[in-house]
Image (cartoon, rainbow, N blue to C red; front, side):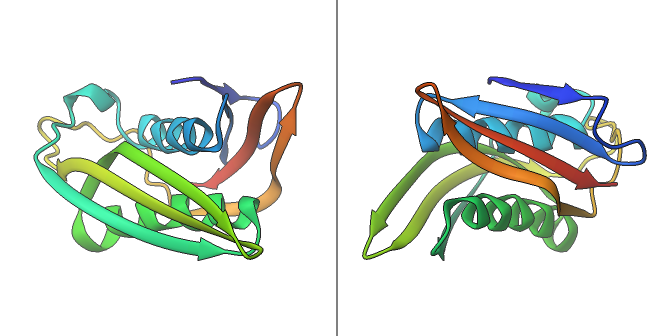
Length: 143
């Protein structure tokens, strides 16, 4: 997935930039970067459990914010680490709707050495933009 960690944005938190040719690719890249932040080897997280989520927001950037927050909530509340499998974003009537199929498994500290515990997505430097034909986002995570 296309993303890179940014060392010069936040000293006590984790920041990354994600991108994609479509909004869906951007959201998938951001979700993968989030998983990489939490787990040493994301590929060790097997796709055993299936979760579907639906989110809506009037702003695309806030939809991404809510999506990443939901992944953090599922990690904290259900102890699930999740990969994005399929994401669909539809804009209708001034509102964005996200339908996401996620797959993953429960945290097993033997197989999933955790890097850091992500507490939340912050609004510090948070942005989503369409630049030169590519969707880009900057995200800072509170760890």
